[in-house]
Amino acid sequence: MRIQLLPSTFDSQGHATLEQRLTCFLIDDCVAVDAGSLALAATREQREKVRDIIVTHPHMDHIATLPIFIDDLYPTLKSPIRVYATQEVIELLERDIFNWNVYPRFSELKNDYGPVVEYVPIPAAQEFKVAHLSVTAVAVNHIVPTVGLVVSDGRRTVAFSSDTSETQEFWNIINRAPSLQALLIEASFPNSMSELAEVSRHFTPASLQQELGKLNQKDVEILAVHIKPSYRQVIIDELKALNIPGLGVMEPGRIYNW
Ligand SMILES: [Zn+2]
Ligand SMILES: [Zn+2]
Image (cartoon, rainbow, N blue to C red; front, side):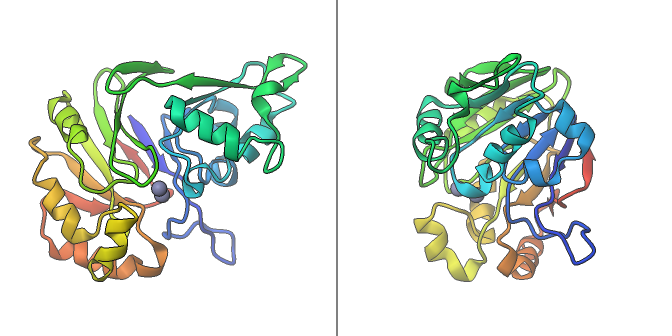
């Protein structure tokens, strides 16, 4: 499985930098997990291929360019873009984003070929298909309805925590997953901001360390993501100081193969 965390910040020359402000992972260049930076950072080839987008929750850093991505492709789509999310999240997207005020309600619009968006409600803790992948979504503990994902291409499995704090069912599911190669897990705030992390339901390196005690799988690459750019170096230093084997930091833009 080929996974890229799309960049969301660029330097004065237009080159991607390591700060992650938005969340969008591309799997095998065709399935997106969240769409924070999708319309900004996808290459022309990726833009042509991505027709399946899983939305873990409706926070802006995860959906910022979802409307723009659909808008860009609107005239040329020969089949609808499929947006996978829990029913609750679909309703929030329709109410708060695609409401004719913030952006058009694409689910009611058609181009010359037909509908441009199709919502696919995802079941909780039950496997469903997205393109060539099998996905299980599980509710995690964030401030709005949010799912973590366990994704398999039939040979390898990768888990995405999305935004969460202390949780349980996610671990029950990933501990049972066959061939788990990697866990992409959030580490949003430095240890000094544990109170804010708690109320906004995110991890610090210290709370992440405790949480990783629930992982019963061996030889899993653990990559921290969703590191708040203003505290990036402090968080990375605190993660390193944990000395957890297999724990690293995911680099936006880099292609990981598992
Ligand atoms: Zn969030
Ligand atoms: Zn977020």
